Length: 456
Picture 1 (tube, rainbow, N blue to C red):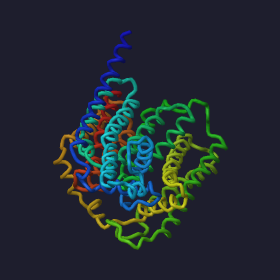
Picture 2 (picture 1 turned 120 degrees about the horizontal axis):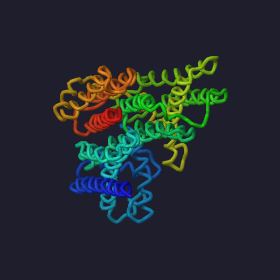
Picture 3 (picture 1 turned 180 degrees about the horizontal axis):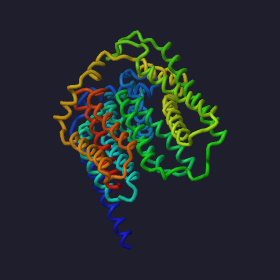
Picture 4 (picture 1 turned 30 degrees about the vertical axis):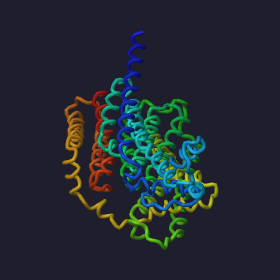
């Protein structure tokens, strides 16, 4: 009876916090008119209409695909329910007042931002709750800390691909947490595949999320080490068939990636100037990605031909291959947007070429500005200092034996903290719209370290 009463209070408190956050974010969004900012509210509305008309979007720099995937689906549903008067250019042409219709569409698109902001908070809090085990009431702390970060409040007022990209990353974090905790073979495989799928959608939405991808992968291996008891309980050992399946999967991943590289590189050479893109050629990301898929295949081939196989090595490489498969399949989501497969393929190759072969004219602003860390530190010193203190506490806990943490786990924690610091230096710009990258990463990592400390 007492546990039921506590459960009811816990649920009530959670609902109150989530509803309060949503109301707060919505109030901020409604304070600004539809013409508040053209970058990206106006551009996004135009491209949504273009996609719904069977045309390719005009703005592809980010490249923004994950955002349009949500907006195209939601706008069609709203149009069918009679909540939107304009869906495509045909509706614009026959409208007596196209301006009102576009204003309505812009407001509808901006409505997604506060909803996504709350979704990010809830999903990341649920992931931490899943990893923290029985520490139920800490979920309220997770909601409060994540929900009050300034970057989400800022992004609730406008349309930006950064918010959508972080949303997909949050979904990948939750899927990863579920995969780590799952002890069923099918569920673990499916959740790992979804982890890769959401990572791909995050990358397809905003290229700056590449460091977030690395952070998640290291978090995954850290959690595998922290929760070794959550393994498949169905008695599936290393079989010849299992080795064959994983070898075929790794070969599939390699061939699909190389095929997309070749097809995209020799297609779509735009005559018009694309803002921010200086040229197309083989970039360091192209080489690193190709080598990664090749190494995964060669390692899997080595396991297949070896007589003595380490179960841990086979498991970890298999997990990586499943995640990589989901990542590549995310590019096939382009075929959900158009009824004509050739248009979808053209959109897919365009985004792939931009991500892996595009070189941006302002690349120096992203990569070669270490002074940005000082600007981020001045903007939110408490967040950075908290991360440093928690990392130091983990190191002291290992050194002084008051935490049950191994050298490998500590090394993974230090790698995560290093990548979180690099988010402030590489891949972001010194502006408010990019604060969401460092703030979300550090907040989640700090809370995750807090979970490790109270559990061990």
